[in-house]
Length: 197
Image 1 (cartoon, rainbow, N blue to C red):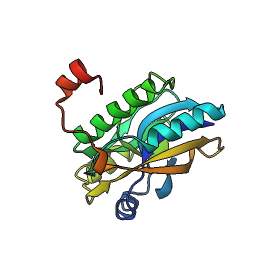
Image 2 (cartoon, rainbow, N blue to C red):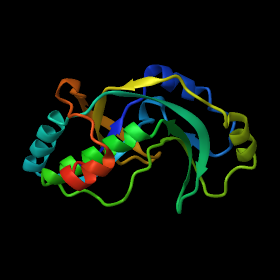
Image 3 (cartoon, helix red, strand yellow):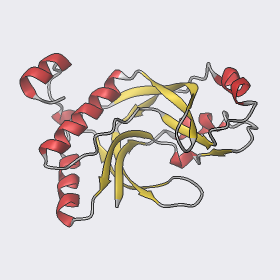
Image 4 (spheres, helix red, strand yellow):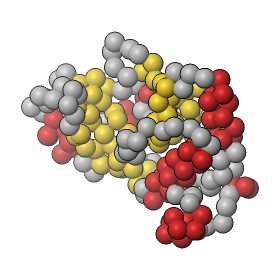
C-alpha cells in the first residue's frame, strides 16, 4: 500500500474551497473530501510488522491540538502537471508537527522517503500550458482566507491508482493526546539536546 499522513479539512473549509471553483478551461478540480493537508509520505508499506509498528507509533504520538486557516491561492508548476494550491497560516505549529512525526517514525525504525512535503492544499490539477484566464482567476481569489479550524487528529491515507487523477482513501484517524504532551521546548534546544526535531 502506498501510504501517507495528512490532515483533513473541516466541512466549513471544504465548503469555502468550493467557492473558489471557477470557470477555468481544462482544470480538474479535486473533490472536497480529497483536499487534504499533506504531512509525511510513508511510501509503500507491505509487511504486517511495518503496519503494526506504524499503528503503535501513531497511537502514542504526543502532540497538542492547534488552529490554522487557509489563505491565498497559488499556481505551482510541475514537470507533468501544474497545481492550483492554497497556503496555510500559521505554519509554525504544522511544521513542528511534521518534524515531530518524521523524527518519531524514524526512531521507530520506519524508512521514510526523503522528499520534503510542502504544507499546502491542492485544489486542482491542470496541464502545464495553463489556460489564458488563469492569471485573472488567481488575482480574483488572491485574498482568499478561510475560517479557522482546529487540528486535533492525523489521518493515515492510502493513495489508490485512478485514471482521473489522484484518489485518496482515509484508513485511520489518530487523535492528539494533549494530556500526554511534552513540555514546550524551543526547536533549537530540541535539536541539540533531545533530538525531537
